[in-house]
Length: 411
Length: 112
Image (cartoon, rainbow over all chains, first blue to last red; front, top):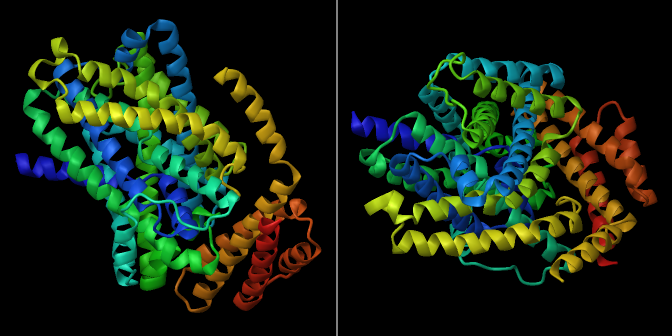
């Protein structure tokens, strides 16, 4: 039973790893810079593993939700600024996810984009209302495993494995022009942000509290984050490798999310394309639900409301109204006609700006021996945590200038 | 001091990314859209993608090109895009040839 639960948790983490921003940025990065950013995806995955594990541990031991920590550790005023910034970033991400799902539905059905966006949002809201928390996460996470088709496709097209392995060494490709060098830096920041979106730790730790984790769940938490996120990053790397192998030589830097599905159609035809679209649909849909719930969790935790999907909607009315309102706001953004790819570009920049303030309280509380007892951050977690925190601060400082200089990655 | 530098840097950066940057961004986007469309046509002709998918991708590519069109200043680039947009059906080789032309223009703009 325990092994079955653990396996399900890992598979859910794998299937839920990729979202619309990775679908946009990984193939583009591969197309433009080949395998030169593989190391960055690996680094970003280690960062999300370290902070994901930490957030699960603080949820299990400290029973402290992330935004409650934020209010206490950063102070009410500053905490409120971070909360608002985080809500804006997550709502943009949620809009990008809804737009991505609507595009996929449009590609399959031929029906109008806006109609599909409304249908998708209603389906997500119904999923949250009707399904128990565990099944919301698992349904979308497990069905997102259709994304494995991208991994199978990349193996089928026989990529240069030595070149991919060479990408594991941190590098800046030689001979880049001034513009390309700036674009390379922008992609490095964007990929880091896309893999470590702040909503992920908020959703993960809130889920731990919803499921009443305790010390007995620490091993599951550790294995789920390390193995689940680790394997999930292979899907992201497959998208990058596909971009390098198939898109780069053809002069494609995917401007349309539907193009990404061609990576599976090249070796497997219609079946591959439909499996890829199914995987993309569930992975993006899962992320839309997670971002929206993460927003509602953040507000509920910050203001001390009753929160959580383990309670009936009427028992936590303000929490319920919050996630409904965030879905409505995200849908409103999509209905303006904003492109999902553009929204994803805004989302990665907005998120990386918020990221240091999400991780700082986590680092402080996970290092608090009084609260965490014997489960306080050890030498490895502490060193990696603070080291990565500095790196994230540098990325946050660089994000906005790089976004402007590259016209949102267009140059 | 750092704050003042940032305040100066951002407007300068914005100014620096004006006209020339807009044209290069539009050329890059149009180049990729033409290449994506060509790939879809190639796969559709080989029966490797569903008809609905191909139709929607064509429509999306047309919309993208139409939105890039106003920022294109190079005469060859506008002619290539206009030719594609005005045709009711475009073949993979036509699209590839237009994409190759945009590729050359993109490289010349980058070299400036």
